[in-house]
Length: 336
Ligand SMILES: NC(=O)c1ccc[n+]([C@@H]2O[C@H](COP(=O)([O-])OP(=O)(O)OC[C@H]3O[C@@H](n4cnc5c(N)ncnc54)[C@H](OP(=O)(O)O)[C@@H]3O)[C@@H](O)[C@H]2O)c1
Image (cartoon, rainbow, N blue to C red; front, side, top):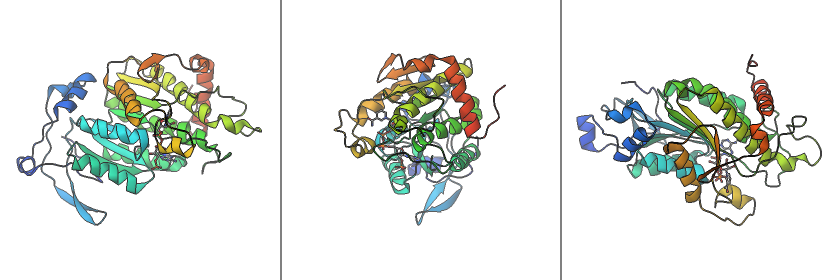
């Protein structure tokens, strides 16, 4: 049994579970473990009695040891939209959900919803992906506080909705950094924990909007190039997923990318003034498939169907260029 050192929200346990100090994974959670082929599927989880209390938003909440057998999933951008729906669904399988975003109120609401429905357990961690420093700190917190990470869903994103070219705190084109580069760094930092937790999965929530990366102007400084921001960042996520899948072959880590659904009814779509054409439930179903089902690694899905992505995703030279550039931009040594 490992101890989780800090916990910002508590698992909801019944009084009898508390007094017995034991909690059994839900059937759905057990199925999740079985589906991902996790050895923990062979056993039940055990949660000891809470050992101390911490203060959160004025009220005491329990801090307790987490069952080493409970799956831990991290969904970036789970304070709203698709990420929120996926967080609720994964919590319902019995997984421990790390909710992420910037908005504390919305993040804690997701945690509360999970716990009040006694669906599972969750905590909220805030980190602005427009800051590489915050991404590093966020990854450091996860590494320090969790013993395992079974599923990482790189979902947080912004559209380019007519704001013109903006730059991040680090001076990089904002959409490229938030949608792709910060997830590249986060995944890199968390990889040792994910590999230790194998079998595990990484999902990049990309899009059907894909434009080839122009390596002469990745930061979109040329006139009129900013219109490509969203589609470039989304294709970069697919190149990243394919690259990682290859790198992690044989480790038990399955990495895929997907277009969840077209114009789901989310803040991003409403902000762009687009009439929604699908629901977050449809998108969540597609994400859940590549988290739960026995799929091969290194694929791109359009909704529920594996399909071909933009040609550049299959260009090894382009992938290597993007990897090298990304390492340089986040301050990592080049791969030899
Ligand atoms: N909606 C669609 O039809 C559609 C289609 C294809 C692909 N997608 C992809 O699906 C993903 C989810 O989008 P959505 O439609 O669900 O959008 P959404 O409702 O606007 O949710 C976006 C999420 O990203 C987080 N986020 C945004 N900027 C961030 C930042 N700088 N740092 C940290 N978190 C940040 C938001 O958290 P805070 O508000 O708390 O910061 C929020 O939780 C995106 O990657 C999007 O590209 C969506």
